[in-house]
Image 1 (spheres, helix red, strand yellow):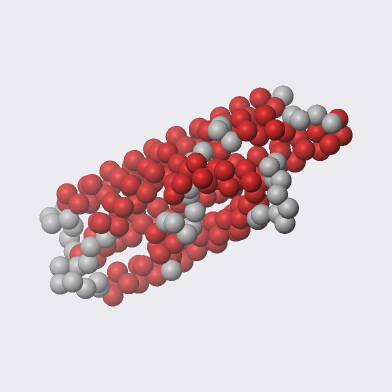
Image 2 (image 1 turned 30 degrees about the vertical axis):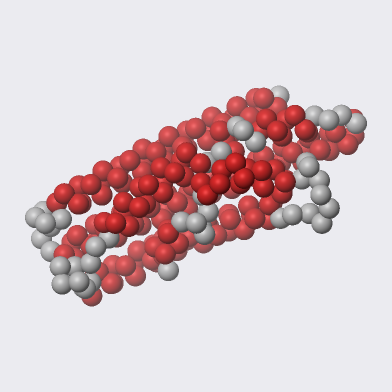
Length: 209
């Protein structure tokens, strides 16, 4: 039954990961098209800026959804661990130990590949965010930026709420416990390094501030 639950988590994660990869690839293609057409295909600098802001808005949305996916994975994992700990306490077994060690290496609990792809794509949109020909931005561009900020505010708030939930799960206990959730999340961070999706390590936060 536990293996079936892991399979469900992984299947859901794989589906979402594939969706994110497709959407990020589409954004990369839009960026490349934008770069190629910047000097001739746009009627004005403001038209170019508006398209650039639309791409940035889509990146904010995807980033928020990725954080929510990580939150979903963490909460599901936390729920299974709690159930197993109760089972071990009642039966005197040690089912929690092998299961949790195996779960740490499951795809649904590892976000580094997807995060790496996201970061690479995000770097491209940052490089493409160029000022106007005279080195300034138009008033219409500033107004459009304000609209984008409002449109992405809900996504960003949901992202922050998800990160608070994850941080709550990671909060260290006053006593060391190798089966604590904080210990498992610490191990994951050590293995993933800087690849973890967060609001702090991504420039996406600046898209909405």
